[in-house]
Length: 375
Image 1 (cartoon, rainbow, N blue to C red):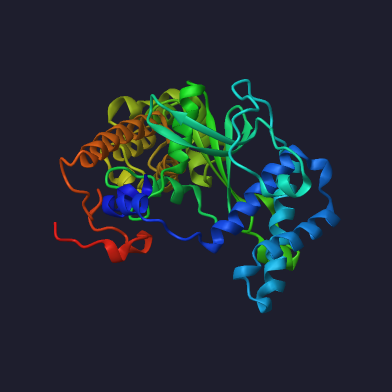
Image 2 (cartoon, rainbow, N blue to C red):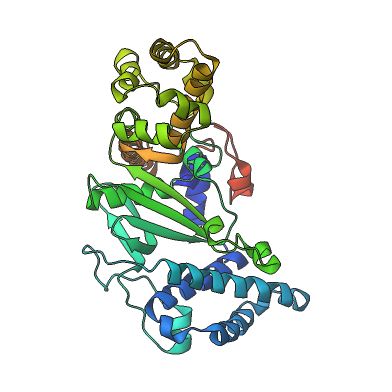
């Protein structure tokens, strides 16, 4: 979907033109296969085995790794495997009554190597959601309310993940993976708080070499709250979080008022649909919140500062998480794109070069030489 949103014509050619396997796909698949195998057979893997498997991976990738680069790749492979083991040992997958062990995906390199099967209900879960028009493969069902995806690339913050999944207008680096998987999971577990984690298992490569690695630095988690953001923002839970864990002046200000005082702003002015803290501060809602806090606490500088800190934290929560309206909008967006795609397939209109956001991001175009724009 990200390719289609960036450039429908590039999407068309990606479906028509065979492209050679890229080296990093093979490496990435090996790491994915190891993670799946380890969930199924942790008893077969120890430090000595990992060193042996690094040799196996080097042999498998020898056709595109220069001999001079093998020591660097050896370190990369070893750190990647060890980090995967560390995560799965530290955070063991939990059961889920919706899963059965018969819907895995394809063959597994390490299962073939060890002559073992991989049948865990937690790993490599293929799904096709006909009602929503979604399909995909879940790397790891970490728990009933938590999905995890393995990534070999650089880590992105939660705010960047949410920003890249914007719909109107789309980002110039669109990525809807977290939205897509959470929407599917919501259809199975409605009205539940859900999480999707990107596990960047090579993110701490340099830190491991320096002896300073922290597993948390490999993880980016997006939480879906099954309520509208305004309901979440005006809740007692949010008020208490701001009062107890907010910035200094925010805590000081809210410690002097009651929850009912906090709610007044939400009942007086509409909460704008923005993730930008400056827009929120300058909005009617922001002005009403400050006026209300000054009236309750007094005309002190820390109240004005505390109000801005409060509003920035609300914007931060909005920009790091998904809420009910986000998944609702995504499902509608998918339906519109499917209808549009079908019309183009039937010849009612051409596949344009430009996507929803205008000119495509050519750094993300795979078939640039084929994109002749005469529209």
